[in-house]
Image 1: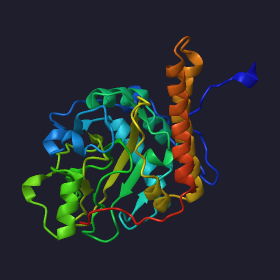
Image 2 (image 1 turned 45 degrees about the vertical axis):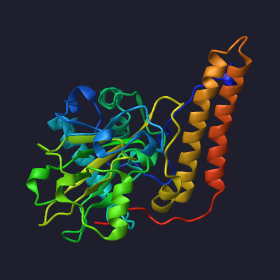
Image 3 (image 1 turned 180 degrees about the vertical axis):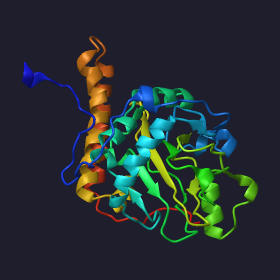
Length: 332
């Protein structure tokens, strides 16, 4: 019966050309995690979003949180040890000067941290909706390092290429001058208007959550929250860890800015990852059709099959579309 095994493996453990790092710690949630709560949670309505402005469906009213603790001191030390080894693989693009992507294929620690069910459950409660780690490996464990040019922003004002993510400081933000993580208290359209007209962002509409130290994070609906990472004003080290998630409910349509990812990641890799993600979404619809068939409800069965087909058709269209895009951001 092995030929009929429909077990799905959401994440390959290796990727051609991605050599494992030399010294990889073993992730242990009992040792490396210290899950805490934020003092403040911002709603999408507080940013000015009306229901008509939510162009991508979302099951959560949460926009973003203040900082909360994720890692213990031991967890911070282990993650920093991994990040220093992965710094050798940084790349750059018009938005970010130095970042490492695909680290989950080089470090088992990074992979297990990114997929941690303990963290996923914790974040699901904060987001008030069940989450799953993103099915694309390059949307997990994105690492940002400070630019080599002083005062250059780590990342420009932008919104993300996925639905939900958290940003965690690997280094202590209180030991450097600058490097703040900031939210814009407004909508994407408002930021677009400010940027297109050359107007400055009012200071009172910028929030920089206070970070007590390394291992603390903020959680957000990254495709709706405009944010940036400031540059250092004096020499120092700044490393952040960004991990991506999708909403569990397959009825919530996917938001993956695939064309943007094609610019920053190897095309062959990102094509395969995107195809795997969309195939997984299709399989979620088919799983219900296979495991709990609607006997006597023909229309429900047709709907399941149509939903599965729609995911595949969307993926095929995206993969066949060769039109190029520029990196999207709102500048500094």
